[in-house]
Length: 249
Image (tube, rainbow, N blue to C red):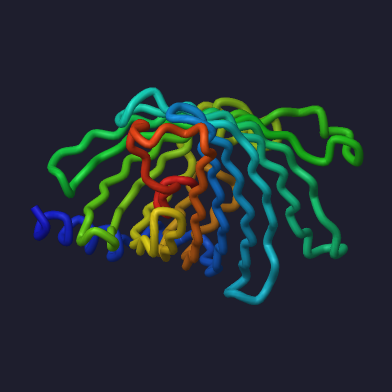
């Protein structure tokens, strides 16, 4: 099983997207904090900074705040609001964007160390509500993410993932209406320092197509996760691992 997993990991790392599109490289740095209220509900918080233009220019900041419901060890769902401050190079200002995301995730444990998961995300977003005539327009996307995770030891784990985004409606990008137009391929690892703190790193390739000006991204990401629990959270609650490096993008 481990050999098969390593082969899949190498295939992801070796994948080369459409070479006709423009290339850029960047860095994503993330802090995830979860606070478990009880065995079913948890509050989620994320702060992330993204760098682009070959690691030379700020791209954006975003803040997530949301609520997760875990039905059992296999299924969970969450509703998250994201505030995005995207830096605009021309003029040096920011574009302020608001996103609502509904996630539903199913995880299947194949062996004690090997698991697979599927996450569907329905997201809606608008931008520059007060400063643009088009601020009232909404963008709708469906994002489908497939992941494989392997526990190397009690503390070390590694994972690969592939995500495919479908445009339901975006009045600013008519050329991509009702089409698949962006893929992401990701591989990473995570180290659990304690039941509360874990850190990880990943490499991500993003490929765009069916758009007027496609851009491919090569991303190196770093992440820290802090998992907290209230006194009301049962000690025999449904098992839950920290927010995974590979799963929250």
